[in-house]
Length: 204
Image (cartoon, rainbow, N blue to C red; front, side, top):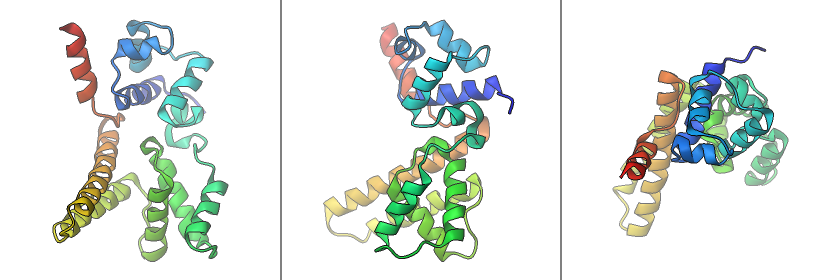
């Protein structure tokens, strides 16, 4: 499979932005310069194997996903995920079709670094709905719908602490939807707001 340097550069930029690092700060993690990081992000050249491994580790994705996106080998140990999902359901057998659909859509959204609870929720949705989530657009809609539902639910709760917990969960799901939307638009899933603020701080 051929490597698209520009797409790899977008993934590296997204990982850096997700961590809120400036190019200079990110470069220091690899004993390299801001200019080298800029070249990686523009797709002019690729990091060496050691740095690719470090970047993938920072981004919680596999090196294959860093190089090939959703076509790369999954970051998740799906056998272990299945064991955990069975534990959540009191060792009931898993619905294999729902599990396969879950695996496909979660691996498409590799850049979200979803945790086991989010994966379990997606699996339960896949199991209990006629129309499974198959695309990133489907997953974006799912996160937006669940987020909005949680906000509506939180409005009817009197317990302030519980309400805040639900609003935090809603905000997290909304951030997943935003990352997918941004990724679909330009291949970069992270916002550059934090990085830009840090750049300005360093200039002052």
